[in-house]
Length: 340
Ligand code: NAD
Ligand code: TYD
Image (cartoon, rainbow, N blue to C red; front, side, top):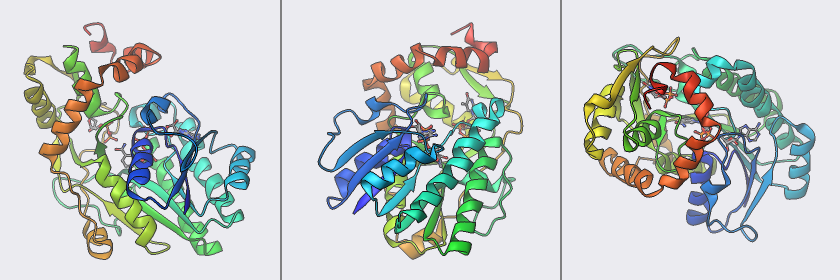
């Protein structure tokens, strides 16, 4: 089977390319990625081009370019990972998120249909459901109520997928996953930001009271769930994917510091994110029951491995942090940036 993966140079996409090449010997993978600030060819270092893997640089919003890759490759399946993925950036630049996450998803859907792609998998997020209070979990029936521009642009894509299924009987599956962690995650996201800052003895900026809750899943388990949904999911269905692993941000940051042998005095409370969602938690009964998927990583093992990866791959994140990232960091974290 030939699978066109978009966004395969980002965090989850690059893990997925490796996962697919390792676990699905009959697949050939084409990676279509624009290489934005978040896309990094180093994430696929050691993955040989030719044979079962090919990289094509391009924009999912650019219809002519997508057409060209469809024409040349004739994939049987498309997995749409490509997105602007960071909530804080979406607050500053919502239009870019609508372009990539909503318009780009529609371009991919339309051309997948035009070129007879058998199945389209949209990689979505639990953030489309909005926020939870202290109890309850998101099920696939939870109404969409996105709160950030990022979440709204992803929810729009989910609705366009639904419409394609309904109107054109296109075979589309949507997965909605909770927060991922693991190797190659861009150090703007909570876990790699905190690990890399701690390794540099820089302040760890915790938003608001730090009592927000996220449900953490190892990226490799997410990849396994996406492959299961592509291979065995039912057309038109949504599958929630979660780790059953809720953590308050502050407790998680303290745990990271403990692992790294660094003092809690590095924690610095900073202004809260506008509209910050309080709690996410996923009910993953459906994917467990219907597709037999379960996470394999314990948080202890996954986090230990992840910390070890950031310790061993210091040049990878140091290079990122020394470039354009510095300007972003200075603007986003003006209250602590001067200290670090
Ligand atoms: P990321 O920001 O690390 O990577 C995004 C990738 O998409 C980059 O390689 C970038 O170059 C590429 N890209 C961006 N705009 C593009 C465009 N217009 N055309 C082609 N390529 C483009 O993101 P990630 O964390 O790997 O997330 C991947 C997907 O998973 C996203 O759709 C995101 O919404 C979803 N998701 C992420 C998480 C998470 O915890 N990170 C959780 C659930 C769902
Ligand atoms: P993030 O990794 O941005 O994922 P998301 O907002 O998509 O869930 O953030 C995870 C949590 O960590 C979220 O509640 C915001 C919080 N956070 C901080 O407290 N400080 C930070 O510097 C960042 C980036 C996030």
